[in-house]
Every structure is written in C-alpha cells, then in structure tokens.
Amino acid sequence: MVEKVSTSLSSLSMLQPKAEVRNLNFYYGATQALKQINLVVPEKRVTALIGPSGCGKTTLLRCFNRMHDLYPGNRYEGEILLDRINILERRVDPIAVRMRVSMVFQRPNPFPKSIYENVAYGLRVQGLLKRDFIDHQVEQSLRSAALWDEVKDRLKDSALNLSGGQQQRLCIARALATEPELILFDEPTSALDPIATSSIEDLMSQLKQQVTILIVTHSMQQAARLSDYTAFMYLGEMLEFNQTTTLFNQPLHQQTEDYVRGRFG
Amino acid sequence: MAQTDSAPPDLLAVQGSVSQRQLQDGLFAIVGLLTILVATIILLALVLQLAIQGFPRLTWQFFTSFPSSEWQQAGILSAWIGSALVMLVTAAIAVPLGVAAGIYLEEYARKNWLSALIEINVTNLAGVPSIVYGLLALGFFNDLLKLGESILTAGLTLALLILPIVIVTTREALRAIPNSLREAAYALGASRWQMIWDHILPYASGSILTGVIIGLSRAIGETAPLITIGALTFIAFLPPAPIQPSFPYISLEWLQAPFTVLPIQMFNWVSRPEPEFQINAAAAGTVLIGMTLAMNGFAIYLRYRFRRGVKW
Image (cartoon, rainbow over all chains, first blue to last red; front, side, top):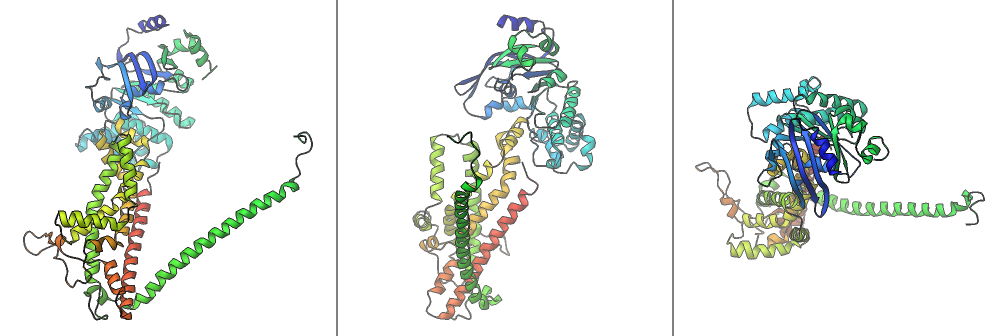
C-alpha cells in the first residue's frame, strides 16, 4: 500500500510544492487521529481532502495553521514543510504561521463589527496602522472575494447584517487581506444554500491564480468540480493522493472507489 | 397483549386519566400564580408604605442638610455623599480586579484541580455573610494596614464583598461568546491578549457591566460590615472635595475621611424614640430604594443596548 502511494506521489514530483507533509502523526491526548500522513500541496492549485466523517481530514487541515495548539493535550509528530521550513517545530511561533496561512471556517464567523473592521483585523493585529494601506488592502480583498460591489457603500455597517453567503465571502476577504500564501477552507459551503455555494466555488477557482488552496469537503461533486488534486483519507490514514480526474476515474484502492462512487460515507 | 390485533383502545376509556393529569396541571398553575401574587403584593405594599410615609420629607432641604437632633432640620447630605463615594471606591477596586480574575480563570488558567478549587472557593465566597467581611476588614484594613475608619476601608470591604459576583458574571459572560469567534481571531494571527482585548471583552462587556451593577446595588444597601469597621452614625461635615482650586487640583484626602452611608443613617433614625424620625427613616429608605432601582434599570438598559445587533 505504501509503495503504491509513493508511486502515485512520484508521478506528481514535477509539481512546485507549496507545502509538504512528511510522516505526520497527530494525537488528541492518547488518541491517535492521524497516522503517517504524506501529502504534497502544489502551489497555486486547489487540493481537496475528502473522506468519510471522522477520517481526520479537518484534523489534518488544522495542523497547517497550528490550530491544535489552542487546546491542551494535542501533540504533533513529523513535519509540515512550508517553503522548506518545518512549521511544526517548537521554535516556530504559531502566530507567525497563521500570518502566512489563513483559514476559512465551516460556518461563516464574522466578528460583530463593521464590514471594514472585519477585513482590516488581520492587518491590525500585525500592528499596521497606515490608513491608506489598510484602505487599499480592504478594497483589494473585498474585490478578490467578489463582495466589493455589494458592500462598497456600507463598509461601516455591521457584518452581521449580511446574508450567509455574503458573510462567508467576507470571511474569505478577511483571510485574503494579509496576503497569505496558503488558504485553508474547512467545508466552507456546508452551511450555505446552493446559490451561495456556487458563488463561493467560482470564487475559489479564481483565487487559485494568486494563492494555494487546501479545502476539506464533504461533497465529492465539489471536490470533482473544484480541485486539481484530491487526497482520500480513511480512518486517519492517507489512502490515496492523485490528480482529481485520476482519483475519481481510476482509483487505486477499493475503499476510494467505493467512497467516490457513493457506496459509503 | 391480547388486544394487539383487536380495535385500537377506546379514546373515551383513557379520558379519565387524561382529565386527572390536566387537573394536576391546572392546579399547579393556580398555586404558582397565587404564590407569585402574594410575594409581589407584600413587597409592593412595603415599598409603597415606605414611599407614602416618607414622601412629605423628600424635599430639597432633606438632600442638602446634615443630620440634626431636630427632625425638621435633619437631612441625608453626609449619608448620600458617603454612599456615593464609597460606591466609587468599591467600583474602582472590584471592577478591574474582578474582571481580570474572571478573564484569567476563563481564558488563561489550565483546567486542573487547582482551578477547580479556586472556582469552588469563589462561588462559596459569594455566600459568606457580609458581617464576616466586616470582621476581616476590621482586622486587616483597619488594624493591620492602619487605613482607619475611612471611606477607603469601606470601599475595600464592599469591593471584597462583591468581587465574587463580578468574577462569576465575568466568567459567564466570556463563556457565552462562541468559540468560533476566538478561532477566527487566532486564525488571523492574533495573540491571546489581542483576541481577548479586541473581541471577547468588548462582546462580553454588556453582560459584565450588568453583573457589576448588580453587585454594586447589593453593596449600596450593606450596613453590617460598615458598622463593624466603625462607620459613624452621626456626621455633620463632608469629606474634603476631590477637586481643589489650587495645585495639584486633585486631592485624595477624601479617601481617609470618616463617613456614613444611607442605610446606617436610616438605621440611626429608626432607633430614635421620636415618631417624626421614623418618617425621616422612611424618606431615606425611599431614596435608597430609588437608587437601587435606578442602578438595576441602568443594568437592564445596558444589556439591551449591547445585545442589540450582536447575535451569533
């Protein structure tokens, strides 16, 4: 099995990797949630993590910005290289990691502040005060998130007055404002209606021009529509990683095939 | 189970037990309503009686006169100013300490046996009789720290008394903020302090303020601990003004001044033999109730103000 994974990885070796996971184990207390994960996240591509509930895909995603450090008892083993620097090392400050790797959550979670302040917050925590620069970044990020035209006249309004889909696009704009190199999406459309979902998906396929995207999704159709590469996880293991078309059409493993054909999940 | 394949049970046959259960329901509603009515009516009658009795004395002169042995000339000037200054000290000490302790316990402290022990103790402290705080203050602030029978001692004592209330409400307010907002702030590279200061604390401030005001409105009515530390009952002068006409303009001498407060003044008048002084006491009581109601009303307003437009 390990051999097969490595062959499928070697066929991807010409890719420019933005991040690389090497032999990652992760523990919630005594429970091992991730087992010997290896993965390449290619630069300026969309990589999807799929798999049945509880397979560890969200756990893996949250390793990339050290979200697990917020709660006691969690432990990493192995490496995640971001531009050849292991971000799991102790001397790397999680705050420094999060300034380069931002995240969009499952449910829209805007701050109960104005639209402008929501987008500007990532810059403010870094101590940036120049008004012109912040104004510029807020506008650019809202434009990239395809929200600018809807909100440009009410930047001072509360973000909570926006619709669910708009709130999620605001969260994407907020994540873009610090010009991250990698954006993590944790089932970003699972709380949205189909129209809002399709606008977020359009947005993501545009964003990959400028940034690397790693997305966890429950929907195989979404992974198939959106991603260039797909990783299938099962019971805490990385079972298969390949180009999306290959993974969906000629899966190497029986479990992968059963899952992508909708036989379980 | 012989009836399983016969007709469904007759609806009329079960009617008896249904009516009985509905009767129980109705009875409880009536008993509950009666209890509430009795409680509120008695309370309302007491307050109204106090207000009606004291109303004729609620004149401008009453608020601007010192106590006197002549009931017509007696007033609550030193008492209400004393109450206000003591509350100022209480709030200035209890709010920062209590909010900081609440933040520490909720956001920083690791959840282990030590934090559990502290939590149990804080909750227990809220139930300690106030006179015990008075004894503690007499020994610690008055004798040991030599702060005297002053406004400062009184403020410190009442601050101790309401500290558990402030800590517990702060923790509850922080706990009510959804974790998704904490994670959102962290994910943007905020440090723990930035997350608390920029987000959690502002969002929780309405509830925290409500707790503070409820604590203060308890403190304003306290008599026992202040008598224990030696508050005066008859005082015909005011503490030195905090703002002075000459340099350095601000004076803290008032902190060391002797004082009285409204409930003590009231207690003093009630113990007088002359019936006219009872009317003075009723008037002072009305003022005290008015102050408490105003503070509670303000707390309700704040809660409304802060929660409007903040939903998650």
